[in-house]
Length: 353
Ligand SMILES: Nc1ncnc2c1ncn2[C@@H]1O[C@H](COP(=O)(O)OP(=O)(O)O)[C@@H](O)[C@H]1O
Ligand SMILES: [Mg+2]
Image (cartoon, rainbow, N blue to C red; front, side):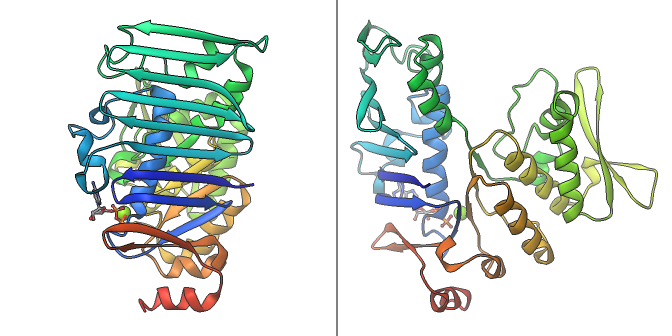
């Protein structure tokens, strides 16, 4: 089973097609475009869930042309194919096209311009319906009228919902211990933040509502952190905090004072063992001691998600096969990708040849 991502005219990705397998390790020089590939995945999955049109709602206060290839403007296009679903998103200032195919059949289409939006979809009885909204789109902070994922639910389009829910379950993370350690508010959305914020909220939820998953996460974590006995979520008022119980002490360690590597590994496990079907990690190895790379890669393979990661560590490559490695390079200012086939290539990368 593979996931195909095609991107055109987005950052350094002028025209890139990548076929991901279950395990994908993106390596390559600084500024070759590894994180840009992760950003493309993030953009599409966020768009499916939240339906934000304006680039500035996804990348801060930026102009559309800033995220086009070399600032040349024009249309940005994304295509994601997974199982029998094909999702297409094309956007340029003032217009947007979204299409969802099930097999080769079109089941959803949205064409919008500044003040008009037309949605056509296959309804549950199998007939085509059309909705035309004049003055519809972009009114609320650049948001399209109904994001695709919500649209499929509201209209009982089961085919569309099952198609799109997979693409909406892409988790994209760039974990940072300073964010992972923060306390959570009980009222926040039950979603792990890109940098790892909200981990306390998520683990507390698992602790109350899915004890089996919580235990599984803690037990898997102790494979990586053998001196830890327990993870303890504590809720006071509407604030949730996390603590570590280590083996040689009764004192609970507040996450504020926990090891950055431990925090990062715990966030990786929570994102990997939860609901995501496809998980992407930017700079996965930062903060983590290389002595646990083998265990981390063992765990990542074990849970059977589609995992995409970028790394700068040659040591991590010792624990994957050449076919799991995608070499990212920049040629004449544009990102190119190539999946490796043999170990000679891997040695060349490790020694910077
Ligand atoms: N609009 C753009 N058009 C073309 N290239 C861009 C654009 N924006 C950023 N880049 C390139 O992307 C690089 C950053 O790529 P990134 O994926 O973050 O690197 P890395 O491989 O180190 O993760 C920048 O240094 C720049 O060369
Ligand atoms: Mg990067």
